[in-house]
Length: 313
Image (cartoon, rainbow, N blue to C red; front, side):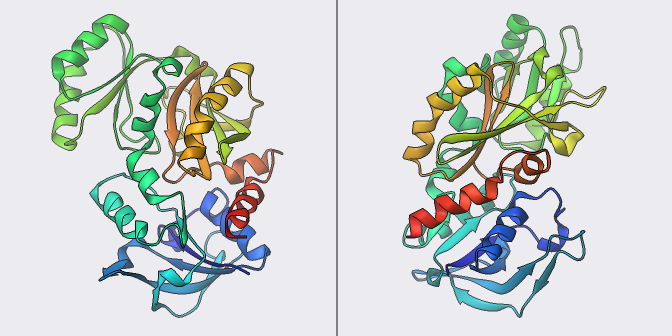
């Protein structure tokens, strides 16, 4: 039996039917591991000791509101756990970065998934830029004239926050649209970081495929088709998911990035591919486990736990 601490957003707020962290907790519990729960706001670093307010948790594959039971919370030294799962959702802001620094004091004696320094140094829209030959034309900048020149070159473009998630703040600016300057002004007021600009890929109407990799190897593909009148395909934005086998091009992409993921000891990663182009590498809190299984694909939670148990053997 392993001792597992799961750091996540408040358990009462999740949708258990679609939450990947919940799927991992169900599988860990089924294997007989001790499962405990805490939220990142209770983390403390005192001298060299990392602690959190932790409670034992039992999870149930039932509707929201009936999906968990908690024991009493108590402050616990996290060094006593075999594995800590860092599974809170972005935004990838200074709070997220600080939490990664704190958890790094535990790793690798207590294995943190995914490793905090690797997550901190490879957020999804930055790590992907290591593979420009796999990406659509992409620009990362705050410079207005650079963005305008990129738009003149490519016509329809996508403008999105560099550290966003779930499709929030993603805009399609079509050629001739007069709102670009106003949108740049809004981004400048909302974000201190550079923005990401990409050439719009019309193939997104056929789907934005999430490919899940475990230990650098692809295990399933989930195509997400945008809703009518929507440029975003994220499930949070109404995208319709369907299981989708990997194409030869998608396997080439996975083969190209797999060694970089293995080098960073990334256990659970989700990449996004549109029309044969790699657009993001999601390492913070990837999703899709429940949907893949629901549509007849592999039980990815089983594969992830196999990888974790191998590390702790």
